[in-house]
Image (cartoon, rainbow, N blue to C red; front, side, top):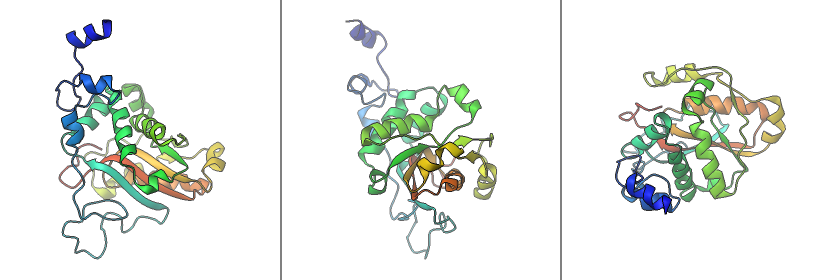
Length: 244
């Protein structure tokens, strides 16, 4: 009775559009209405088989986004494009304290997970800075990873540490982004045996240029994993790069 009264007085709203999301919340689907759930924009095709970036006409001989990625990065996948309503959901998770949005993201990512993710041994969330964790109360990548892992039946191994605050990536070009996060992550000695030979999925909320992915994979290399695949909720294109 109390729950019904609370829903009547303060009905749950969608984190993206503000529409009522009472039924979705009751069903455990998170604070995202059905229209926004169904309206997540797919990454346009053709897309790169390795990094998932849109390739325009597809006429280029190689993908400019990942042509210089090291062999340690087996691939990168995303659920959708960082445009409405995905943009608003990422903003709600990162800046407005809607932790339940991360649960929704992880569940949706599990529902559409590619084979490379389903075959993984464990999931590794990208760590945020201590300052961001204090401000938000959580690491958004870890929230997503927990929901994704629960749906796929995989363990989460938070084996990466952020050893320095890299600062915002928002206004930086691709080369500056790489320099900004280079050396930002560390794999502690106690996790190296766990990582060795394992198929890892690096989980984050957004992939922009892949700079964070490359920095994290570089740190994981100290444990000689079998393979590393990145998986994020959304990815940007050149016209949608204001959330990183």
